[in-house]
Amino acid sequence: MLFFKSLRRAAAIALVTVLAANTAFATVSGQSSSGKAKVTANIPEFIVLHYYSTLTLNFDTPTSEALDEGDKDFNVSWKGEASGEGLTTANLMDAKLELSSGKTTVNLGKVWAVRGFSREGLAEVSITVGNNTLANGNSKIVMSNVRVTDGSSTGTSIRTNLGGIAKSSATFGGVLMELDFSKTSRSGSHSGGEYTITAATI
Image 1 (cartoon, rainbow, N blue to C red):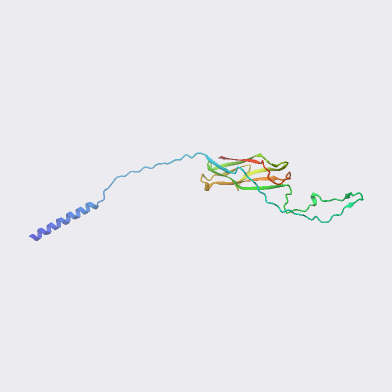
Image 2 (cartoon, rainbow, N blue to C red; image 1 turned 45 degrees about the horizontal axis):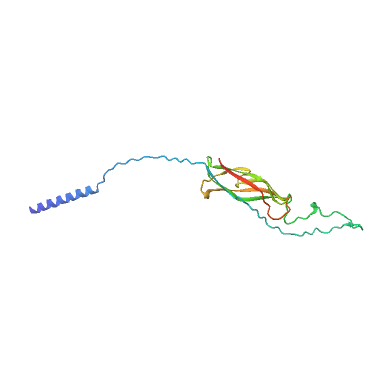
């Protein structure tokens, strides 16, 4: 009899233990709700132009030469007067440096850059010449046909891409110009030339 009482007591304890364990590990059901938010950002038009305010063009020093134009006979009177055609423009030998028209086209790469935001993601970059003459006394160099270029388009006014405001996505460009040396007679610094670059959002 005592044995059966002990057995019933042990069974009751085991049942209580199992019920307690099941209660401890039971998942309690909760409630939740969620909502979506739409985000809009209004970005203003904004442009940054980078440029050099002073440009100095240091030309290579050409090699000085003495060109032997060959033999030439002259008829000379006893009064000392000589006749016969001497050197002319047409028969001068070519030197290592030759500017047949007195002009050379200068390509100044990466002298401006733009970045920013615009309605179409574009910028208009234009150039105007304020003073086209570089002078040293009466020795002059004349600028002409001055244009901007981004590598794809070239002109006095071009449309170029805006890559955003980060410096790493800036658009770089150059300036092309013709320099006329036909009225240049002096070495040294010739100054006074001026151009203006303008960048506008599109």
